Image (cartoon, rainbow, N blue to C red; front, top):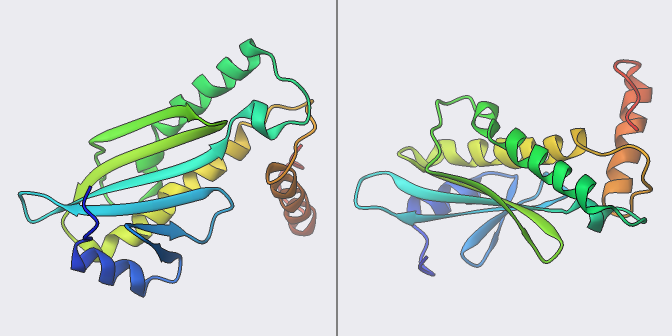
Length: 171
């Protein structure tokens, strides 16, 4: 990846209020987890985009010890559910890359794709990052005491559910 971002990608992300520039990346500002996107030129007219979202592994998010069987099952389920991330965008998005791996206590989700219209990509990548965060929260394992930032996210979800009067109360 070069330090030079394609100008049309820079313009698109700088115009969108959900992103802030951070070197060769644009950080998603609408999520609690660290979501970011970068772009590079291809041999074609489309640009290649990489979206990365870092969320804590289950054992990094809990106050108690999580057994390996629970952690492995949680991670496998999280990975499988993230395969549906392209459905979060309004366009017909085909991923060139989709993987989840553990790094330094984080579950790192990476999505790669090419897209021709740079102006559509900020909304697409924002939707993917928000999908990852929502999928993570749906996969919270009951019975554990969670630390930051997950405990705060759970608290906000409880308050939102209580105010709206709709849906089951989150953990």
